[in-house]
Image (cartoon, rainbow, N blue to C red; front, side, top):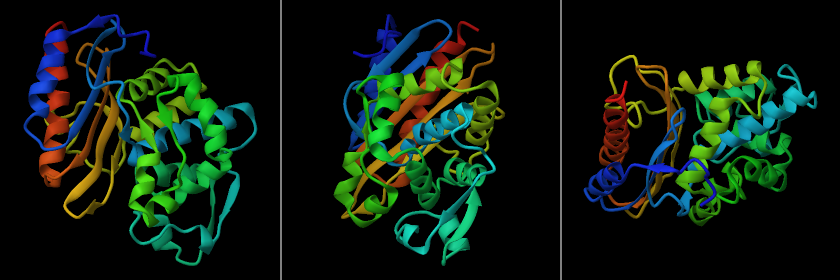
Length: 284
């Protein structure tokens, strides 16, 4: 296992994750870490799961790392051509607002990518970041070999199979979250900007925070595939949850190849996050 933090496994919580996952037809992967104490729990934490839009988080981190190094600026203009727009099957407010292409800043691309999970904007950032070949060493430096980003949103919108080429393990996803929380790869300004975007995202609030107390701060990135022939390739959420005493729960939940409806898939994620919250809130 890549993650050195898995030194205080909570076997009871592992079992609870497994019990919850039995209520849905699909493959469930979970990794959870209380960052400040090293307490952890998992279910299939080292297995590969389709990332879907979860991949937008490491892409954004790579871009902000380039900003910190001076290779890019947040106000730098990026041309998005009509040929760059993702197909209709992929969510893209940027495409919908500018069907003939446009010019936007790096900051705006980040906002579209993280806050609205925009496929066109994500592909533009991936291109700026140097493409999949550059992303590989960047993600490896944070999470070992547990993340693979090979395909663009454009490609995934044209082929259901392509979605399986962008995968992550739950453990590696939590390693990325831990890196973000500890601020070891981004400047304070870049980290604050990204956390603000993750906290104010307009994507689903029924997953990690679905059963948590109202007002809980959750900085998260969802990922959702389309449903084909009754099968949904991926319904995911990864995020940082601020606990009542100020500690931070990093949690990644992936539901792969499920036949249940969206409410059921999201409900599994919410139940798993609530189980981790309940377990580690007792010590607050």
